[in-house]
Each structure stands twice: as C-alpha cells, then as structure tokens.
Figure 1 (cartoon, rainbow, N blue to C red):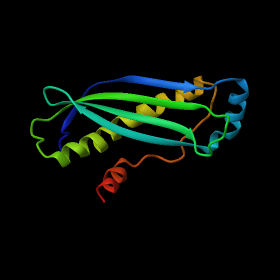
Figure 2: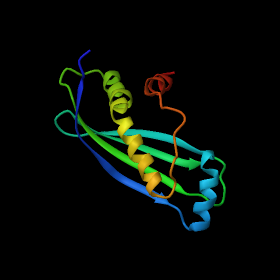
Figure 3: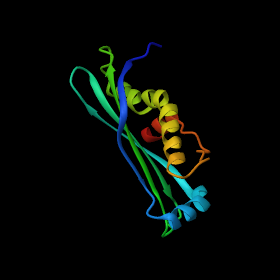
Length: 140
C-alpha cells in the first residue's frame, strides 16, 4: 500500500516538567513505577490538504500522592495528505494510527531523554502503545 501522507515538519510545541523541590524529586524517584503514560491525539486541518496533528504524552502518578512531579509533552506533526484521500475514516486512520506509528519511536526517545535530564534516569515505558488497537477500540 502506498503511503497516503507525507510528514512535512514536526516539533515540540509545548513541554512541561515540574518537580517543585528536592524532597519531591527523591520521593518521585522512589515511586516513579506508579506513574502511568497516557496519550491524547487531536488534529486541525490546515490549507492545501495539510493537517497539524498534536500528540500529547502525559506521565502522571496514578496513585495521587501529595508529592508528585508532572511530565507533559505536546508534539506537533504537520502532514500533507495525499489528494486521493477523500474518505473521513481513511483520514482518521492516517492521523490516529499511521502517522503515530511513524513518529512515536522518536517521540518516546525525546520524552525519555527529557525525563533523564530532569533527574529521573533509567525510566522505561514497559507497555508499548498499540496504535492499531487504540484506533480500532474507539470505533466500538
């Protein structure tokens, strides 16, 4: 199957890492395993069959401890959709699945490096995101 889109540019649109103090850093380092990665994807149509896709990663404490750090990354990808794509469902699959599968390895590396530089070395995301499954699940 021919690729129905071309990535024109991608960049970090917004980034937030908050660790209020040293005490919190030490606490979070000990409890980082209770943090969970979430993803949110939205898009905005631009001119000339271009679409800006915003992929937001959130890494948050699922246990709601008082001492916590916040990690958020909004990564923008501008793609040009092939002229042959007319169907809304095909467009959604491109945005929510195909583009994500292509950009996610780079996005995950950026996020893990930022966590490392923020004082949290060695963090790994155990579960890989299955974009096909996420896309199909939302149709149910």
